[in-house]
Length: 118
Image 1 (cartoon, rainbow, N blue to C red):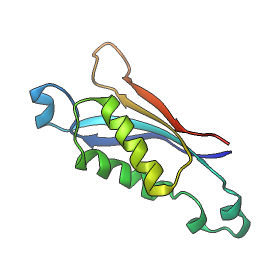
Image 2: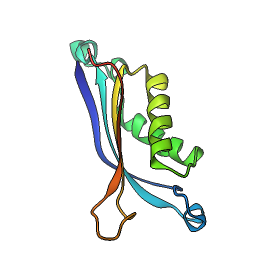
Image 3: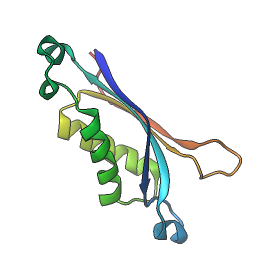
Image 4: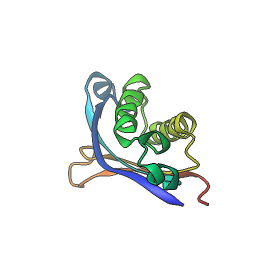
């Protein structure tokens, strides 16, 4: 299976358990790998036959802002499901970093894989 990826996508969204976190936007950094057969797109150089990472990047930020949650775990699960359904992605690996969550750590976060690699 081929993979299309987005690494280090920085978005601003509302996320967090504490009341003060619900009042501000915080930075999340997204890494995403998506299973996809790129051969049909490569054959005739057709964007319509592949995953458009620019569009997906916009959709990721829009989804996070349209569906605020407390936990990164919840956001990861819902975002993976949304992307798989929206783009018919058979396999996805999604990592969400929250770089400002722990003052003495570079980042914290979650990583999930959903679907089947063929």
